[in-house]
Image (cartoon, rainbow over all chains, first blue to last red; front, side):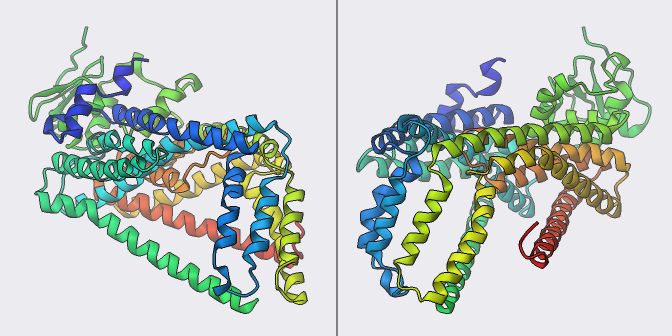
Amino acid sequence: MNPRHWLPTPQKMSDAVQLRASGFTETSMRQSLGMVLVLGLLAGFIPFLVNWEQAATAGSALPLARLGAQASRIQATPLTYISPMFDPVILGETVQLIAGLPQPLPGWLAAFLSALGEWINWPLRWLALWIVYGALVMACNKALGATNRLQPFFAATGFAAAPLILVGLSPVPCLGRICSAVGVIWAFVVYARANEEVTNLPRSRSLAAVLLPLLILLILSLLALALFGLLLYLVVSAV
Amino acid sequence: MCHFSPPPKQPAYGTVKIFECRSVLCYHCRKRASGLAQASCILRHGPTLIRIALRVYRPDSLRNYMLQPQNYPQFIGKALLLEPDPFVEMVDDDNPWIEGLFLCATIGVLVAAAQLVGSLLLTVSLPHSEALLNLVLAGLRQSALGDESLLETERTLRTLWPLLLAYTGYDSVGFRIFTLAATPLGLIGQWLLFGLTSHLLARAAGGQGALGQTLGAVALSAAPRLLYLFSMIPFVSVAAVLVHVWGILIAFRGLEVAHELPPWPAALVAGGAWLLTLLVSAVVVLLVAFLLFLAGGNP
């Protein structure tokens, strides 16, 4: 198993993040897949260490440690406007009690396993974004007149993962959020450039193909949120 | 040493030549690529051409009459990367539907075993579910709910709790043992349904493939489910949307090859077949839920 077959050269990655056309050619989908997975793992490493430390300090699995950390916030949340039946203080206490329940495994091991699971989720999320969003963009590309095929498209757009590695710095106070925002915007620009390069569409059409799925997803999310809110309101009213 | 095949006689084949080392020459633009995946000039002519060319020119020594399980990782890997080779091999196999059946069963067993291990690890990483439920109920009892509402809420929570546990794999090892058999069977059922609907739609769209070939090609769309192997690590969540969308992309490539369909009809057939499968699955789930409801919630 030759690593060169699974990863593009650093020069290619450098060219791609600098938006040079040469960065998006002569790369296979296999190399892009490898790049997305490896960069996802690298980006998730610092958050993994932070999560492990947080969970190990609490002596429980990560979700419970996070839940315990949120208890004081829950107590301060004005939930009473939803319904008078939710007492934030009781809710906070219950959450604290749940977070403090013992588990069969030693605390550090439960903490490690949960932090490891959370780490593996990083490349899986990036993979989902790459494939699912890519499929939608590809459909828009075709509708707007592109003639390219799936493999070169995925091979080129995988380079958007390169600047996204900055998101891995998110646990760093203050700087982390700025780095994350820069990483996301940079990744989007690289994605749009890769799409333009691989489809040979005019810039406006290429950009429209990249943005259309985002718009559709936004509208669908808002609709789903509104439906969920309506459902919650009806349930609370009924109770 | 490359084996130069004689130029094809039929005009449609005249644009491509496949060598023994699997490199490809396009007569149309005179480009030579080192592998099928790189042969974008030929891929533009459609995978049909490649399939026909492979079938005609592949030497007998390279013909794969029965896929071997040791080749599955490479075979599945290529399908995940949307390369045409595995579809060509599957479609040209002696019994593509048997290969598909074995592939789905293997993936199903592996995934179920991984989920069983994941369920065990998740259960020991979290507090006992009964203690958790009792704490939630105790919290509810302290809320300002009326007696009647409280009883109703508690009853609903107790009914939904086992379903929630079974869904998440938390404290439901018994259920996961049951899924060791149910997952492969469910996957095979889904594959058959997806394959049949794909075949009917592809035929309606002018496809040429046989049912066995469709089933074989579509079976590869189960490959992304191998991502669920990661669920043996607790708290790993594989997005269902990723598995389904990737599966549709693979089915799209498979239908292109098996039915010799152009890209747009193949995409519509793959998407339509998935929607139909989803609809039928939803109806089946609703029917089972209705039967459970009639039985008073006891299976």
